[in-house]
Amino acid sequence: GFSACHSLTRFAFANARAMGGGGKAYAKPPGVKLAMGFEGSANKVAVGVVSHTGDILSNPRKTYITPPGTGFLPRETAEHHRQVILDIVQQALDEAGIAPSDLDCLCYTKGPGMGAPLVSVAVVVRMLSQIWKKPIVPVNHCVGHIEMGRVVCGAMDPVVLYVSGGNTQVIAYNERRYRIFGETIDIAVGNCLDRFAREIGLSNDPSPGYNIEQLAKKGTKYIDMPYTVKGMDISLSGIETFAKSEARTKIDAGECTAADLCYSLQETIFAMLVEITERTMAHCNANDVLIVGGVGCNVRLQEMMRVMVGERGGKLYATDDRYCIDNGAMIAYAGILAFMEGQTATMAETICTQRYRTDDVLVTWRKDK
Picture (cartoon, rainbow, N blue to C red):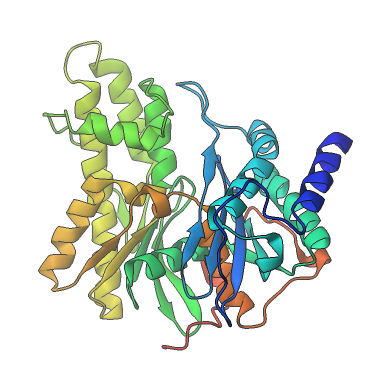
């Protein structure tokens, strides 16, 4: 409403010339371009400052955490983002030690994601663009994950397993597109794990997937679960229903524990992911794998993938929660790669879309093949 808009205007003008907050000043080297990236496609809202050479100057974020047994809804999530985003922008400027005048472009998540949270962040970017007089670069969320993983890990041309709350894809680059070789045909891995976590009453702090991972370490009994691989794709809705049904009937009966079910669910789903990733590696004649997305933080998934990749003589690249989980730096970096190729958007083009395929993006910045 008006008060939020007025607050944003005062904030932007206050920062138009000064850094504010007294952060350590950053001496911008000649020729270096800086981007500020804005992410808000799901329950994390984040702002990051990155150079075109891949230096991450700041990357603060906040997570909207709901009570155990509940998920996050679009309207409430968007309201959370609106309430905290200006503080995060200020924090990003302070930690980077820059003024808005040092920035060369503003990058935001165009999609995919939840509509209301995406728009709540895009509105802020449009306003700051007009006040700070900076061009805007729309970014595909999935491509942001991939490029962040590549620059942080130093992976040149890996097969990418992108696993998160909303996406599950096996991707390889060819002819200016990140091609999707395999994916889920129903729900994403993270969504499957989150729904099961709700069923057994796990906390959403710091995330349901993390809490499943910790509980799974205490599991001692493997329970057979549906293993559904369909060619290059996987299906997860069946195993989710099965695991929830087992939890409702067998935990109270003393036939298994919640830890056993978490362990069995992880082992089965991750084996499916390893299989379709290996099939993509064989198809592409590739040796290396990069895991990105929030579920990519899972150490057990990394262990299983590392065994398979090692048997093929390759290397596994993975990052920790700073870069696996949604963050602003990944949007800034993917955006500045496009910006360096001359890509910007007019104000009318700064839309958001809930559906935005990874292979819809023309990857003009990669020249290798």
